[in-house]
Amino acid sequence: MERVLVIGGARALGAAVARRAVTDGYEVVVGARDLAAAEALAAEIGATAVRVDLQDETTIAAAAALLADGVDHIVTTGSAPHDVRAVDLDHDELVAAFTAKVIGPMLVAKHFAPVMRPRGSIVVFSGVVGWRPGPGSLVKGTTNGAVEHLVRHLAADLAPVRVNALSPGVIDSGAWDRLGAGKAGVLSKAAAGTLVGRHGEPDDVVDAVLWLLRAGFVSGETIHLEGGARHRAA
Image (cartoon, rainbow, N blue to C red; front, side):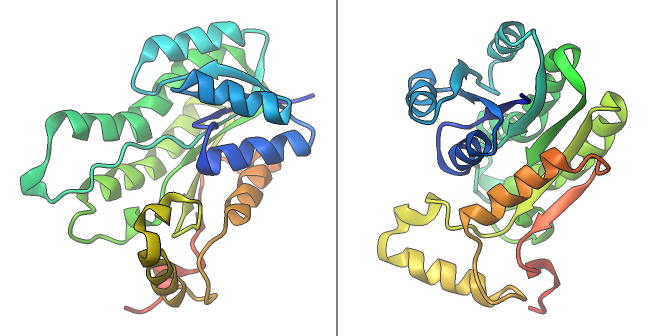
C-alpha cells in the first residue's frame, strides 16, 4: 500500500485530499501544525497523524524520522497569507508567507528525500493569483508564482521522484465562509471570470491531486485548475 503524507491535512482542502486518499486505498498520514486536529481527523478516516509545522524545521525532521520506513507521496497545502500593499509589509509575516509556500517545501524535500520511494511524488500548492497581479496580492502572487520555479528545479534535483504544483483558482473550500452573505458575490464573480462558467469545488482539487499522484510521466509541471480564468479577457 502506498503511503501519502498530507501536510496541512487537518482542514479544508488538505482534509479533503486526505479523506479521498483513504477511500482510494492509500495509507494516509495527516500532517499538521495542530497535532490534536490531525489526530481527530486521522481517527475519523482511518489514518495516522504527525505534527508538521512548515515554519519549524525541527518538526519536519522529526516527521521524516518517524516515517523512515518510507513515503511514496507528499502533498503540501501550506500557506500563510499576508495580503497587504507594499507600504504595509511586515518583515516577519513576509518571511512566514515565503516559508509556507517555498522554504518549507524545500525543507520537506531536504528531510524526506532519503525516505522517499523512487516512484513517488511531491505535490505543492500554488494559486491563480500568481498569474493575476493586483493591489494587495503582492506577497501571495509572488510566493505562488515562485512555486512554479520551485517544482521545476526540485523535480530535477530529486529525480526520479516527481515534483509538481497544483494552482487552483477560486474554490468553495470553506475559506470564503468568513464573508457570510458576501460569499455568494465572491463566488459569482469568480464564476463569471472563468471560461467554464462556474467557480471551483473541493472535488475539482482533490481529483487533480489524486491524478498527479498517479501520473508517472508528469514532473516539474504546474497544473492550472481555474476554469481558464487566466485566459479570460478582462
